[in-house]
Length: 128
Length: 195
Image 1 (cartoon, one colour):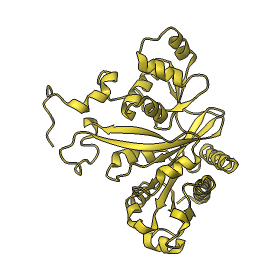
Image 2: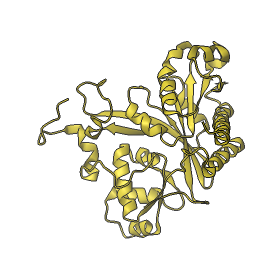
Image 3: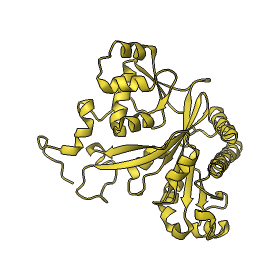
Image 4: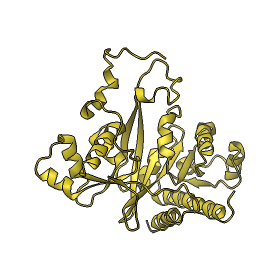
């Protein structure tokens, strides 16, 4: 497969990442279902008008006041591709504006934390 | 910064909903989700070239894949997400992300088009993600019985095969309960006698 010349316009390849100034690699790996919550610092930044542009404002508002949202929800509600939302959320998290809660790992089958999580999911589904 | 969930911390889990195009994945998600199912799009960029196999989309540098998902608040600190797989199974790059850390998968089957779910089953078996088969009974009709479906799919005898009506909240709930029960049973068995 041939790669395009560096100065060749890449069109749709680049445009979705315009809001991240072309960066496609997030500062943190964030799972699709990781939960995001606005921190106290993020909230006060929002009040002051913020510095990160309208995307930052919007995300800080969306995840404020105990309304945790997953990365997937943020991307969907902002109509941004997942990769773009991930870069922005990772930036905001590393600036202390958002807290990111990664899902509990289920990989180790002997891990009691994972088993307890599954039991909570099960009883929660039964109560629905 | 990113942090590991501690006791009492808010956390999330996900279940993958797979199956052929038009089998009712979004209907199933919508019947139990507390939000109208949302759609998120992923783009395979040049960063994915060489990492993901994109030989099946010759001459294409980018591919956009849409996934529908829903949300269930299990309790104040725990949110369960249901992610529908992209319709076309050639978008494997997205499936990798979907199965990472998932509780398990529901493979939805339309018995008139059984072969549509083969690729999903292969994928989950390869990734060792627990799954169950949910036969979606359109209009209350079931064209095959569970044993016939099990035979036709050549799946292990311990994989649950259930029937459901994806439009019905109780029915969908029962499918999810069966999956989590199955995962827990397997987990306990393996924890006692590691393979």
